[in-house]
Length: 81
Image (cartoon, rainbow, N blue to C red; front, side, top):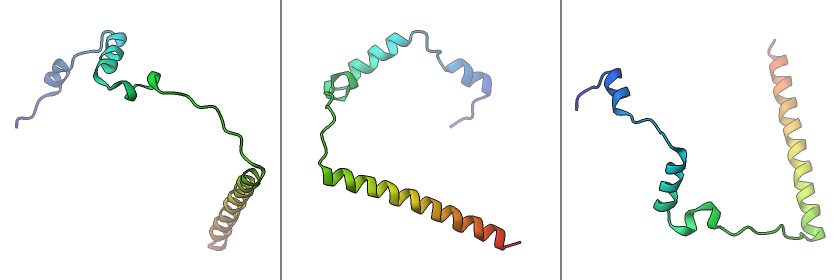
């Protein structure tokens, strides 16, 4: 394996001239179910009251824990002085 100089590498790389042709190549290469335009979109489902309360409790818990960790880091940094 030989090392190439910067000029040789720059000369060997072909510039992308047409973005549409690149997208067309991707659509031709991928299977139909791999293309994002072929996927179905689903509507948001309605969550029950219990799940909604559980998710909000989880959000509050995560926010509390972030504040607790930040406070602990703050105290540790200022206690070292």
